[in-house]
Amino acid sequence: MFESPADVMNAKTQSHDPVPSSLKSVMDIEETHEPVVPHFLSDDPSDTIPRITQDTMLDILDGKFNEKFDHKMVIDCRFEYEYDGGHIEGAVNHNDKELLTSQLFKTPIGGRSLLIFHCEYSAHRAPLMARHVRAEDRTVNAEFYPRLTYPEVYILDGGYSGFFSAFRGRCYPPEYVEMSDEKHQRTCEREMGRLKARKGGLSRAQTFAFGQRNHSVNDSPTGPSRPVARQFPVIGSFSPIPERSHTRRMASY
Image (cartoon, rainbow, N blue to C red):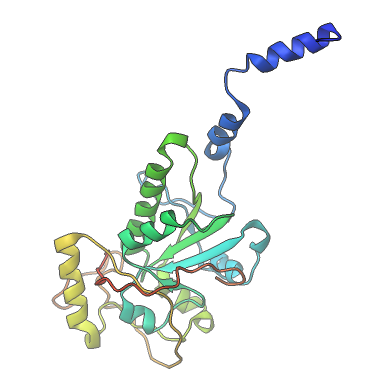
């Protein structure tokens, strides 16, 4: 029983609210969401995945944004031999886009998760992987649009090449093996052939090794605006996908 006209009015307002509060919270997630990490967008209007600079990547590795995320994951989308030859500290090598999305969405990391993708130059493989994860996220959450399981997805501008040039000491081991490295030419050709046949990806978890190697950034066929070479086209609270895949790895460009 109501005790005052004000109580009656409040009750009517609540009962006639056209959108339940729970649904409003879902609807507002992306409409009001602004990426937490300093970023910029690609010149390609169809590419909506934000980019971060090498300096911002270093800030993330140093824990500058730890209070904003429960989990952080740097995903190296290069071939296994590239990753083994040197990678950003704490990064995981995960290039099979189907396997990655399966593991990300069948067993979501949970909490506030930060995903950062990169390849050698972040020109092809990393954007492809990031877009695939975002597309799968849209599919999984279609009923609750615009909710996303992983709203904080970024691409490291300049890829491993740019980061290695600026912060070699933060790479593990502190080396750089290019995609077009002559020692791995046959592997590269094989993986590129699989890409053309199946348009798939590669996958594996992080490894640890030390070594030293001179590097050059002039031969990789994945470099932006570069001619095709030869004959072939988390820190603090990282939550890597730990198991090495037993499926065959595929190039994802």
